[in-house]
Amino acid sequence: MHKLSVWLVRASLIHMGIGFLFGALILHHKGIPIYGWSWQLLNPHIELMIFGWTMQFVMGIAFWILPRFSGDQRYGKVYLGWGSLVLLNSGIVMTALGIWFTQNLLALAGRVGTLSSIVLFAVLIWPRIKPLGGYAASQNS
Ligand code: HEM
Image (cartoon, protein in one colour):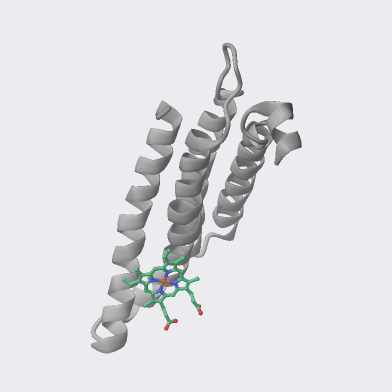
């Protein structure tokens, strides 16, 4: 497994842990209403569960398992993936904090970070979406 996949999956697991905790607190409050502030965790919960956990996990596994190139740069332009990892995680944190503290500009900057991360990752992974075995194999399938 490439180091980039390792870090994407590790980061996604951290988001999962925190996102589950937020969800659990909201759920607990729904059953036993003792802390109203937990509803403030709803948007950060959504942000972490959708982008931080689910999407980031898929990115990590996709980078690992999709067909690789022959030769030197087997995984493609890996620096795009590292950029995507940093932008995604900082974007999610900025959006979650921006929503929590009602700082719209911060939340917007976070969303721009997340979107840029997706664009970088798409550029990186696009050429690797191809049939295994190259042209000949694709003709037989
Ligand atoms: C991949 C996993 C998950 C995703 C993508 C996810 C996503 C979401 C989304 C989009 C909402 C907003 C729904 C709405 O406003 O109608 C939501 C609400 C909520 N989630 Fe999650 N969630 C996940 C896992 C969990 C887990 C594990 C828990 C509990 C431990 C949890 C607890 C809640 C609660 C309590 C709400 C509020 C429900 C309400 O409005 O009454 N979620 N979640």
